[in-house]
Length: 428
Ligand code: GDP
Ligand code: IMO
Ligand code: MG
Image (cartoon, rainbow, N blue to C red; front, side):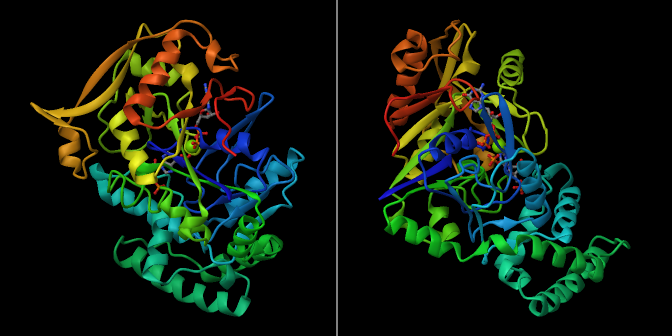
């Protein structure tokens, strides 16, 4: 089996899009299985930048089938906007498949996302306001509307009518709003989308399963990251899906034994957008330097990302809960020009040493990082294509990460472009 899951190992934005795009040149199928257009995956090829949110990152490769799996929450408007942008760039979008089981995001999901955030006040999560949480809430509450429903006018009419009534009830009676959702407007808007997306809709579990059985190369593209996982992340400051490797079996509709390797995408430092504790966060000029050198501003919301040193408690945790078989270390070039670089090896509260990432945010917010300090490097590494040619201190940094995390770093990224990639061991 030639199947590889690509998962975010920190709080998202680790560079998953770049790795998928790089590997997709050899892959037959790329599958997204969770999340929605809260994701922002950036691909850079020959200085040209593409920002993808819902469309899988294999789309630049004309021979790759790009699957939006059943576990996705699908925003038709967001999807069609992305298609339009890609078509303007003469990218072939005919190889995209959308699961007929995926749930659909409606305007009321976005509104409820914003209203819930406002109501949380100081406890806000810092969501992307794309309606992700409310759409997954409808799914688990068993009142969601799926793509297969949208494909049938009669069924869609009935389900939407009932949902608009239910959501107007909430908006009016819980949030005290008078500006309600109009059934006809939303119905007509979505019926138009239905005709535009019909040609992409398929039973994608069959496509993925058959591809694997035929020995094709299949990549599972994670969105978000381990610490944003609904079960294993920094709850409640998480997203509403399962970005860990286990999420792929459910989200793409194949058995877990069909996923052979799991590659953890790891930033050479740590970032997060949104709220919640962050042990190695740097609220000083070093954090600012990382933010500027790494251009750490969100692809989806434009928000400045919070930055900090590499946290091996997090990456060891990611290795355990995802079953990592390999690491791709990203944005190593961003650490050029620091006199010393710190790696957090454990947490401590008073004299107590903590090595396993804690569940309780009250405990996490009391944790202090235990650092090991390594020498930095000043050489520009963005044009290097062999591990041996990296500065000695950069090699030592990578080897230290391998030693502490216990997983080999098989790919190293030294710049945003597809070509700025060092391969130590082939993934496929
Ligand atoms: P994703 O959500 O995991 O796909 O990551 P994002 O695309 O949101 O964020 C990663 C950012 O880092 C993007 O702007 C990429 O173009 C950029 N990037 C990826 N790899 C590298 C790298 O090795 N060096 C630098 N400088 N930028 C990189
Ligand atoms: P990619 O795939 C980083 C964060 C939001 C917020 C929390 C919940 O680009 O790595 P949501 O809108 O999902 O309900 O927000 O999750 N978040 C991300 N952070 N990268 C992402 O995706 C994210 N998608 C959601 O900032 O803290
Ligand atoms: Mg991103």
